[in-house]
Image (cartoon, rainbow, N blue to C red; front, side):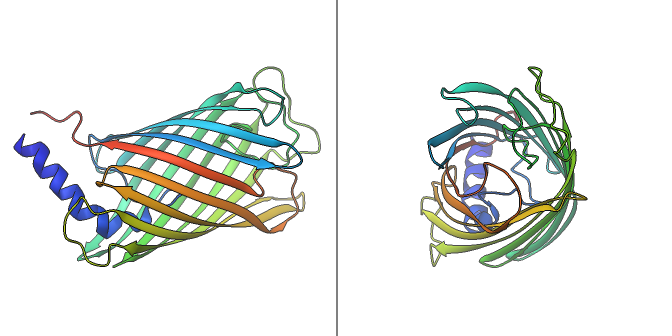
Length: 270
């Protein structure tokens, strides 16, 4: 019980300082706490000209202080009239760099993501979150300075034929480059007093992809607001819209609503 209480208090102390890097549309270089488990339920969608939604169930595990693993399942009506199970994906991130000081740090990590999806492929974008089967690998760096956090990623993606007999169209790229730049600011509380205080974070994220050799690219901006209750329950709201777009895709002009619940010290010895 003493260990559990210590972790809870420590989490409450750390969360107000570092919650501004819990980005809504991207992952930072930092990892969740060792032996912690998180569950996310996410809904996103768009209207053009019909209202379409996608639901994601994601489970996250802090395997160690340097390794974090995710597993996700997807369902949507993006490509048909009714909701159907689309497939799943896995994500792993390894933190190789950590330079820490009081209320600031600089961290670097490498990540890999893979998915197996059962959908037709009318889009030119390679999207592993329910649209395409494939893999992605990249690097992410995050810098925290007091109440402000900045993060950037660069990655490569490769597309495979989707399961269910859906082949990649000849006009679509099999390889892509992804890049993001995110900023987060801890708006509330102004002064930390205890871990029961509600944290309010605001974000601005730039999300882009390019298909080399095809003249297809986009860059979106995604403002977001986030609420963290009791240091373990999180609610995210975001909307992304293109700054420019030369690519056929479903990710343009989409909203995102996410609920996340975290359990700490789950597998440690009592």
